[in-house]
Image (cartoon, rainbow, N blue to C red; front, side, top):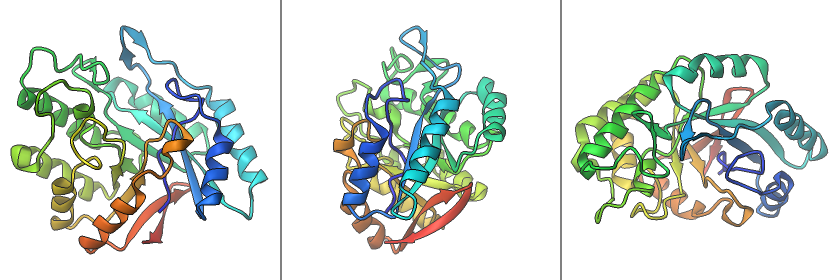
Length: 265
């Protein structure tokens, strides 16, 4: 599987060098590696606009490395965009201006408050907070800008402080069915994200939610470690691969020039 969700020093929360990921991917025998640094336009964290990468330099660097490693591994240029209604026109502009292979569409803010510091969930019960989060995720699927995958559903649970923070399908069946059907209807991918520390599961969304996605007819999956350091690159890949095989899903996807490429498990 190709890990499509990795962060480098172009993201505000990583210091990792791009080339280290490529060398690691080569060592693991990968056919492709996908960079997806953060672009959270108008997103506020801890009272400040999240630092944005220089997209000119970012895309130039990916293209340079693509040429350097040509014939050895495919280097893909992606971006993780943080959903907000007010950011939609900016993301449309970016998609037209730069040669991105794919966008990952992620929710990092809920009701104008960030998830990382759990601002949105203060003074709310777990069910109240997660229902607000799922409403934002559902809205993000109808975004007007192009994207190829829906990022880390369940992200909010990483940072909440509830005694039982795990998100279970049975507790939010209505909301999750709506989200999963919308993903299938838009014909984009569901991302399985293995950065789940603190969320009480091996990956996000959890197994019961991915199983329901398959029951509803969903088959389009991307794999994501959400690594911010090369040490976590492709983390839990075998766990995800084995689970998908149990579901009868025999391939995952990556993207070249915004076109899906199937990769057999």
